[in-house]
Amino acid sequence: MTLDLEHFLTVGALLFSLGLVIALSKRNAVGVLMGIELMLNAVNLTLIAFSRFGASEQPIAGHVFVSFVITVAAAEAAVALAMAVSIYRTRETVEVDQLDLLRL
Amino acid sequence: MDGAGVGIAFWALAFVTLGAAGGVMVSRNLLHAVLLLIVTFIGVAGFFVLLSAEFIAMAQIVIYVGAIAVLMLFAIVLTPRTIRDNSETAMVGPAILLGIALGTVFLFVIYDTEWAVVASDPALSAEDLGKALLSTWVLPFEIASVLLTAALVGAIMLVRTSEEEAEDDA
Image (cartoon, rainbow over all chains, first blue to last red; front, top):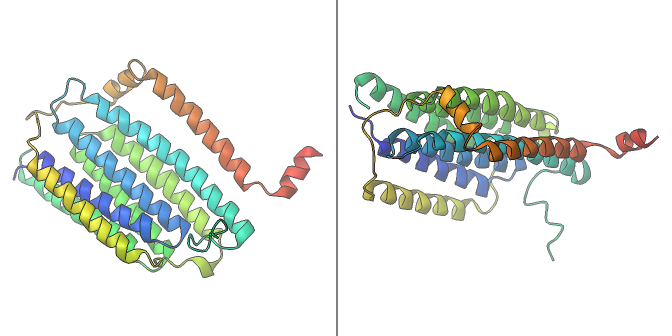
């Protein structure tokens, strides 16, 4: 069978949608972070697929962009989990619907 | 991309990756969700190999599975057992609707667009990536290193307790 760009884009799109649902619906802050990581992974998959199949003068740009996305994702995960631990110490919860101090 | 091998590899990877991602959604235990997330990361790394991006696949395993997933496991085991449930807020209905709507739009765009594709593999190696990172993209590369340092210092500052800060001042 022949694998085309569309096959990989479909997997990326479905993975992104699942990640979006997880990020928007999970109660635990770590669960929300998992959804965000899934979305970033889906975007990376899409970028690599375009780098492999797309007509471009610089196909390596996709790989470079993915390495930056991975770097930023690592930094984001470190800060987000530090915030989760820090919030847990002061509020005794990491459930995002309980963290509503600014609500009137 | 032709051949029975890549076809089997693609469908197996798609099944495992999307199945594990669905498991992250439906699993009730946060610890199981992280373990399924690791399976998803490995599946995406398999896709990178299939798309002949070996270096990115290796970085995916080392950074996502080796660092981010382990960091998540640490964050979970550092909080008590009672808050390990992986349930949804009241927004789960609208979130699923939005996810389905967005996925449908993506699929329409993917299958209605005439993509400008090349038939041959551009054959990009880790050497090409290294040369590109240190020539055309050297400035963003350096900024990324500053960002990583700032994020790690920030993460350490965020988790310091007031007693630890008092010790440093003394």
